[in-house]
Image (cartoon, rainbow, N blue to C red; front, side):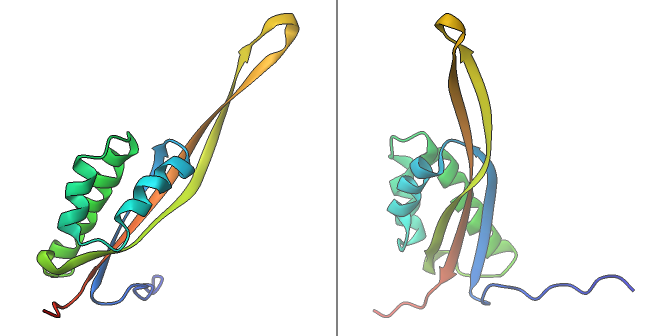
Amino acid sequence: MGKQSAKRRLADNEAVATATMLRGSPQKLNLVAASIRGMKVEKALNSLSFNRRRSAVDVKSVLESAIANAENNHNLDVDSLVVAEATVGKALTMKRFRARARGRVGKIVKPFSRLRIVVREVEETA
């Protein structure tokens, strides 16, 4: 009598991983996510390993999770995976303040982001 399960929103040759509440602005996180869009998974992991931005660590862990989901949950071939989507969105924003001179305040904004990576299995054309 329970609720019916929802249809799968992705194709059969795709797998997804998401991360919510990543500390950092979506604009900075999107710079790293944009650098791996469309890449083969192996090359994207290598690129993220040597990226100097702090958010590259978070993007790499989400990508590794998407690869593991593809391999274990959907029986996809890891060697033929490509990063199909890497989207970044806003999560909440913590608002803080710092006391300044003459009774004023300095506003401090601490943004959080969410990241969604979709990997797709493509057949080799060579």
